[in-house]
Amino acid sequence: VQLQASGGGLVQAGGSLRLSCVAPGVLFKSNSMGWYRQAPGKESELVAVITTRGVTTYADSVKDRFTISRDNAKNTVNLQMNSLKPEDTAVYYCNTWPRGPIEYEGQGTLVTVSS
Image 1 (cartoon, rainbow, N blue to C red):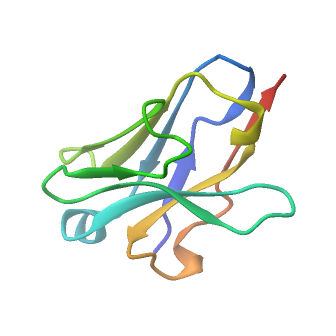
Image 2 (cartoon, helix red, strand yellow):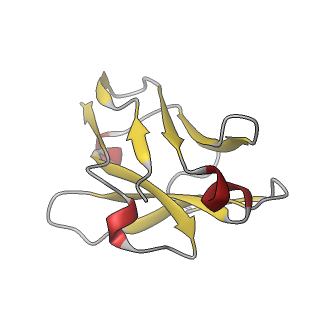
């Protein structure tokens, strides 16, 4: 099982990016999904969660800037990131929530925000 995150890149502060993650259908349909990130030299942190019913929660650091959504027809979870800041620079991963095995996450997608 592996979830494939994509959509990262280099963006200037204040810019936007949209991340996407495709999950195996059985995993996706029965689980809440989350986006996580790990910045260089820091521990991994939870960014946002969306339940199977569409209820969302966010880390305080991204609230009002990021929006998580899920497309149940495409087994995809998305993360729209607006007003990006240099401190958002990290490798972003998707996984179930609670977080599943690290092996699910693959290489993630790198987001770099320049000041």
